[in-house]
Image (tube, rainbow, N blue to C red):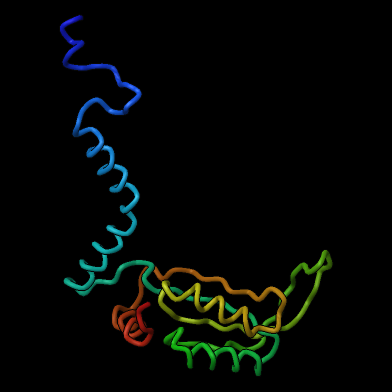
Length: 161
């Protein structure tokens, strides 16, 4: 047992006893922290080389509006700012919801916005800045699959960050 002492000393107050130990720990920590970014870059590279779609690159965003004019104004602003490639303005729908503890009923216009997932934060901030609702609905769902040509078209019409 004493023969192991000089080869494997116990850790001291100065830290790791082996010179390469810090380097290994640092490399492992950086690898774990950088994994999401490295994975994203690898998927983008794979997509660029193969022409395949990376699930979640684009999203559909739902935005409810009080009336058709507000919906058109918000949709026009989104398009003018190039925050989306396409906005559907769906006709009136009935809505039931709780607001300040009371059950409310109204008719609303729904916007379906097709955009890059990376633009959702900017899109949400823009909508909140101009929407008349105190808490506007801005909900996104990632696009898992779809017509490859359509998905490519979305990417071509919404600038990267």
